[in-house]
Image 1 (cartoon, rainbow, N blue to C red):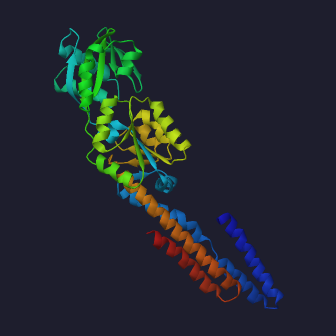
Image 2 (cartoon, rainbow, N blue to C red):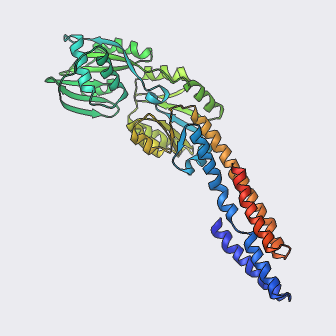
Image 3 (cartoon, rainbow, N blue to C red):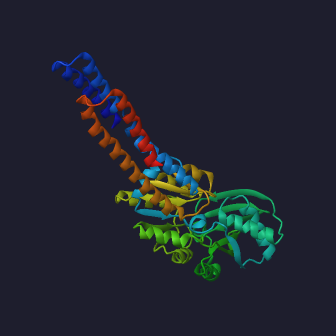
Length: 383
């Protein structure tokens, strides 16, 4: 706007000068009128209209515990009509604990837990930390791990105490050709209670299954209800088992669930929504959420999540309070309204003032004061 506005005003000023000379006015009158046009039309108000509102908006967001990395995301947030949620650490508190344990192996319980905790100690996954904490609570000492490999969204492979271990979800066991049929009844029971089953195999044979519970955030149900009230479609995408995912989704009021999802599926879902013409938000906290957070129109990272998730997102929910997403959308709407008010004032001011100045009806000093007042009015309105 300014790129067009400034040369246009220069042209009007020149035309004013020439017109006054053509009608026989003194040089001082012609020159004074031309200068007054330049003064009254100074595009400060136009230049301030958007950044002033966005600066105030980002400041208000920070007070609410939402850090905004760029102004564009605050502008786009008001247009969001679909939001994709991760489950663990986003919908849930991200503080999983092992509540159940069932073994098929002949090895003792403490030995199996020691093996599992030693392997999982190399992983940064929430569920892995729960297994390690489970061992610590029972004062079970860890062993030596000589090999470790992690498959994102699936599980881990490790060599501990000379034994080859596999820990992860059902798909990971299937990928490794491990028959876990003897653990399925218990795993199914865990899932129906909203717990995540983590299978364990030792030397190629099923050994045990852990039931890990992670409670939904207290504000999650209210946050989903408020988003739905705004007409925003909500979807939970998780690598967790279907029964566990459905249990948590039902607790918080999310009707659409995609379970057993690989990390790249989250990215595919974001792009599919966008292909349908939707403005999509993504809320996550883990390494495997980073591509989807970056691809979304607006990415929200949980403040307690991984660094790469926070770096990939546009906004960070500092306290992990997902109800702030609704507040951010509402704040975005308010910010856009203020921007439009500012631009309306700036354009209206110039539309009226420039012709008056061109007609020689304004003193240059009065024009200077009016121009400054227009800038002040935009700042005051934003505040």
